[in-house]
Length: 136
Image 1 (cartoon, rainbow, N blue to C red):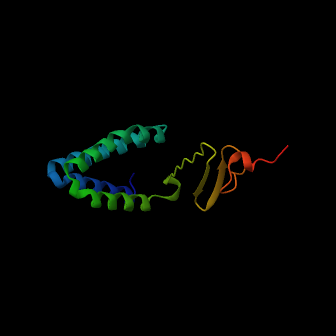
Image 2: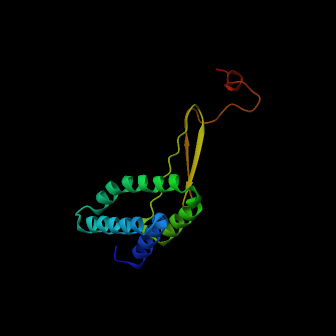
Image 3: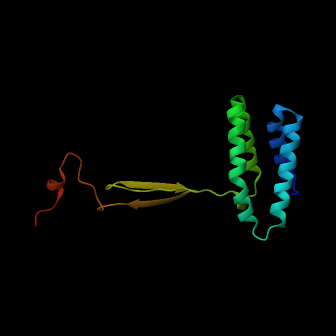
């Protein structure tokens, strides 16, 4: 957390929270430093980061509720932060579910994965399921 990226993120977050005054900016910067120290001392740093994330989510939601005019600035801050992370730190999750004889197509990073639920081919357009079945 001693990287230039961390210092930029710390300053940006404290600055956004600091719109309500220097005391809040200082409090957020102090809390960020404390949380960074917790992460750096932890044996399982990912677990500690994951445990801290919900509290920060509440803080960001609270700031956005109090100051909705900051929405675009907050989004720009998030975009810059994500772009600055090393690729290994960017995690993407996609859930694709096919139901009720439906088809679901998912693409992430250029890969296309096709999952089908039910039978392989739907009935031909304009034909009922009974008419689409082959006679025995």
